[in-house]
Length: 82
Image 1 (tube, rainbow, N blue to C red):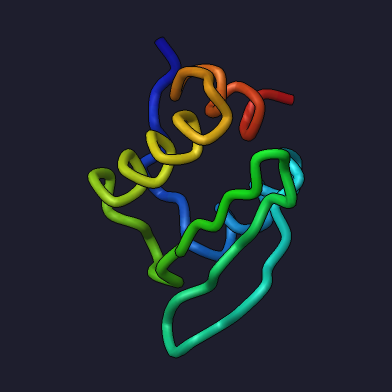
Image 2 (tube, rainbow, N blue to C red; image 1 turned 90 degrees about the vertical axis):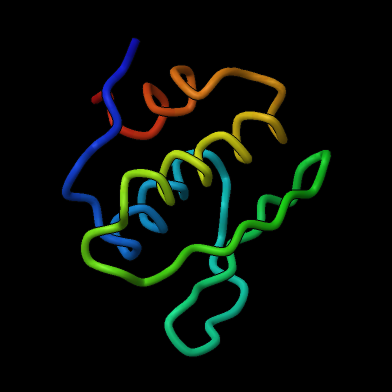
C-alpha cells in the first residue's frame, strides 16, 4: 500500500496529474479544474491549498482511480514513483 503524501500542495498535485494526461482547463478563485480527455473524459477540481488536507487528497485520488477504473495505489504509483 502506497502512502499518501502529507505535504503536497494543490499546485504540485496539478503538475503531477500531467503524468496521467490531465491538463489545467480552468482556474476560479482558489481552485483549479483539470481535465483528462479520456476516453472517458474526466474533470476534477483541485483546491490550491498548501498543503492539501489528507482527506481532501484522498478523495481526489479515489475519484481519479474510479474514473480510470483502477486503484488509488496504482494512481499514487503513477503520480509519485520515479
